[in-house]
Length: 355
Image (cartoon, rainbow, N blue to C red; front, side, top):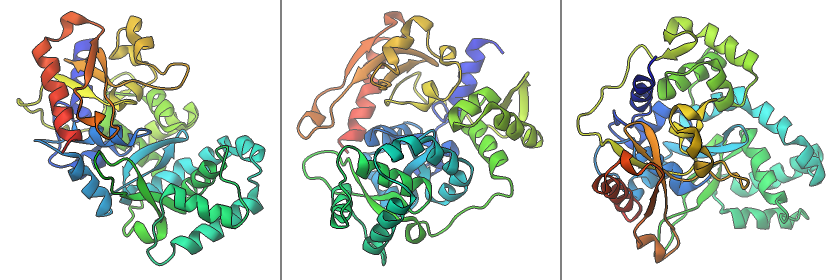
């Protein structure tokens, strides 16, 4: 497949040229949207939705229980529809927990200690309770578990990947964009859960829905699974997908492109369009890969995408007061987009974050 067509088809799958009707539909289509930066995961969904979407609109989907945030794969936190969390973790949860085992041992978080933590946290959250991270750390301190040095974070992680807790409704914040979620019990917050007959095959199909054209190696990277499992998933899914290149698949029913979709888009850090493939040079010139990341600190910067190709990066602070400052672009390929196109892309983000 020619590179221009590949990019065009991925833009379509990502709902960047074929936006969804609402934020929950965008999230359902993407299945899992990377969201280490909470504002970034929410903007990723807003950028894939028709019309002018404000931050409060995305927050409402969390508050209503349609969306949650959790470590769904690769030890990485994603936004995911609430009804999909359990079956995704049935594929990825054990592998994520095993990957963290050495770190947990180093922190003194053996099975008995984690069981104590779970009992205390379930007791504190039961009956519709919700806790901020700081409040949950107080619960741990109350049973003699010091949450410092990342110990508290790893307790949250262990209970999240085993499906005990998740991050649900949004914590209000005065004077600036919201940035934190309450921790809740999954058994109480996830009021409906899908249960596909073959979760591994379903995970591959849903990945292709939101990311195709892509293949088993791309899926293995995205899902954090061995290539053999990824190939098994692809083979089990062949009758539900269309093979467009050797080993590359798309969904049989594709989102309809919108003539109103902009050619130039400002996308968040850890953006799925850039990050979710084995070969990122498909959408970003090799000489610009290091400018985007991940760098030595693991950060992947917000990107400006022009006609399917990464053309630049940008920055913006969500700190109170500074959140109203203009986002600052830095074009890597100055001829790829006009100043007006870049300004319009960043203005759309600014309207979102201040809404």
